[in-house]
Image 1: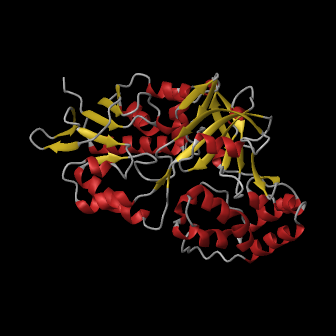
Image 2: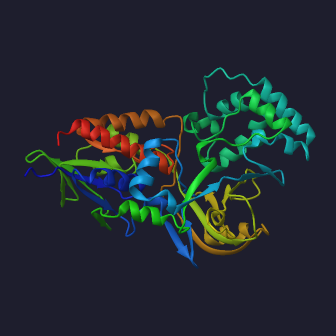
Length: 417
């Protein structure tokens, strides 16, 4: 009997678990993860019986039929999920308006009619020629100057911790609903709603995303508490050697792209230099018991608070519960998070606190060039790299799964099994 090809997967987050699940039937698969708990940034933590996301608010839906089929047919049936309707709000000039803001002009007119008029005039006069110098330019050409200056610039300075003039606009694809003139006018005379793929999403009936993650990991060979520090290719037996111990025929990485090259033996200096130029943000979060709300997210563009959004995790649950995650960019102390939280009477009691490491990639104006240098090298030596940080893209959970599905097909096409 022919021995199965052994594939090593570095990292057991959503991307690593997904590609591991997809390959395990036809290959010998082993996953290495530095954490004692698999799941990456999508895993939850339970406090007082409430399971919350320490980094972001991860939910599931997809526009990709193969992703839906993989999850519902092979990982966790649809009967074990409930559907949640996205109901997001923006706290804008001390008023709560609906998300997205470009469809909330009628609401804005109720407390600032002149601002609403200027938004309409500027939106209709915006000249979108399809070319954009930077993220600020993209906002101005899509939404006009007033919305850009009153909302998009202050909010994006807050969530990226840098000036939008220094950012590439490519991350916005499939992240923001972009109105046309017809839908914009519909919002003025009636109601236009967010029709993005995430306007409805699924959440496990257990009210814990770890239920899905555990199902995804079921049956996989995962070695935990393994911090990858060295990778080299042994030409004598054509094997990849990780940490001088683990041996593989093929290697897939989901490790952060800014770190991976530093682990590879004899990696060229220009590749390591490009990796060090990649930027990302940490995130600090705090779980709160709160007053009731019907919202699933609240966005906070104002500078009077360090928080940039509330994730109303309790409204992901069935039945709903009164719990919210406050999120801010960068490393903040417990005391600072608590102090700002207590300024908002909606937030009653802090339950837990967390500071992430890698949370969001930053799309500065050089990230594409640096990525190209790194991927040219990885492709030349035969290491696959996928996932949010493995590809240095702002991927949601479903896109991470989609990339794993696509990689499986690429591997099958390249390897004769």
